[in-house]
Image (tube, rainbow, N blue to C red; front, side, top):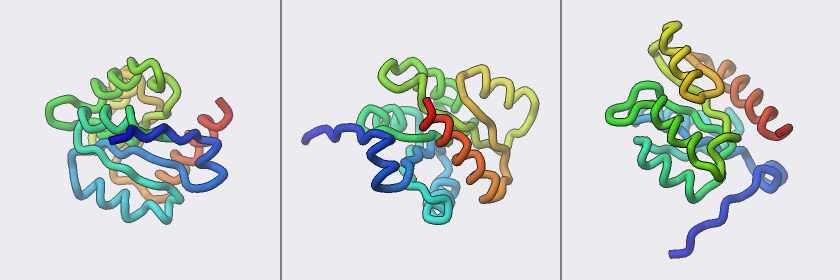
Amino acid sequence: MAVKQPISLDHRKARCKPLVLVVDDDETHQKLLQLLADRLEIIVHTASSCAQAMEVLRLFSFDVILMDYRMPGVDGCVCTQRIRAMKELGSNIPIIAVTAYVTADSRRRCLQSGMDDFLGKPFTVEELYEKLCFWLRVRQSA
């Protein structure tokens, strides 16, 4: 099986929607984001664990990662640290924590682990869209 080459952000920007990786062990949250993909003007790919996320990150070039804070096994903070350690992409892809555990401690822990932003549940589609737009602009200007 041939490994697919990552598609650059400039190529995707000119031809299609941004590619967003959703790392979340909850199938309901995954399906919700997939259902909202057209409204958010994105393409969603899901991973149920850090191991799955690491696997797909080696195959595809994502524009943003939405990372669940609490997952069984490897949580979102540790997963973020592993992604940041990937020299080929880890430092430049925006990672947004998405969590129902909205406390000062959880926010601090997410940001200290290398995540770029924090979005508490419940959130509106507009709030998510604004976060995505902001980080896509940051990525494009980098």
